[in-house]
Image (cartoon, rainbow, N blue to C red; front, side):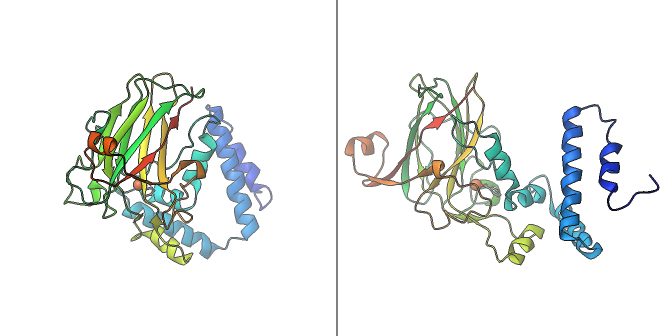
Length: 283
Ligand code: BEZ
Ligand code: FE
C-alpha cells in the first residue's frame, strides 16, 4: 500500500476490512468510508477543518457522562437520530420519534384512568386513546411506558425539586386496548446547549428548543415495540424542533373538555384540556 494516492486510498481502506467476519459490519464500514471520503473530496476539507472536527468530537467526549451523551445529542441536532427513526418506521404502525436521554427503567405502575399530575403545577389534561393493531383491532395487555417534563420544562433528572417518580408511569391496557390518565400540560424546553453541540447550534444561528411533548414506549407481545412522542399542534416550536422529532401524524390538538361526567370520573376541574391519540403497533 505504499502507492496510496488521493484516488486509490478509498478502495485501499475498504479492502483493509475484507477480513471482517460479520457481513453487515463490512457493508456498513465500506459505505461509511466511501461516504466520509466523498465528503472530504467534495468539500476539499483542509487539515485545519479536519482538526476542528476532531476537536468537536474530543470536547463531546470530555463533557459526556453516564447521564449526558453529547454524541447522541450531536446525532439528534444533525437529524441523524430522526432519520434512523423514520427509516425504521413500519408502514402500518405509528411513526417513531426520539427516545431522548430522560427515559428511566422501572417507572411506577398506574392503573388505566389514573392520576399522574398529583401536586404538579400546570394545566390539568386528560389523555386518552387506544392501542390498536394494523387492522385497527384493540391490542389487549399492551404496555405503555410514559414520561414527560414538568411545567418548568425539566424532567425529574434535571430538577432536585421533583420526586424521582414524578411524571412517569407504566400502564397495562385491558381487553379494549384503552389507556387513559390525567396529567399536566408539559412546556417546551431546551436541549442542553452548554457544550460543543450548543456551540454548533450557535454557529448555525439555531436555537435549542423542543416543542412540548409526551414520550411513549408502547409494547405488546408479538408486536414491534414503538418508541415515539406526541406533540401539540398549537406549540410555538412545532415547526422548529431542535432535534427534528415532529411528524404530522404525531400531532394532537388539545380540546377544552366540558363534560361533567368525564370531569367527575377523572376528578378534573371544569373546563379541562383533553387530547386523544391512538397508537398502532405492527408485528
Ligand atoms: C427529549 O425529548 O427528552 C430529548 C430528545 C433529544 C435530546 C434531548 C432531549
Ligand atoms: Fe423529551
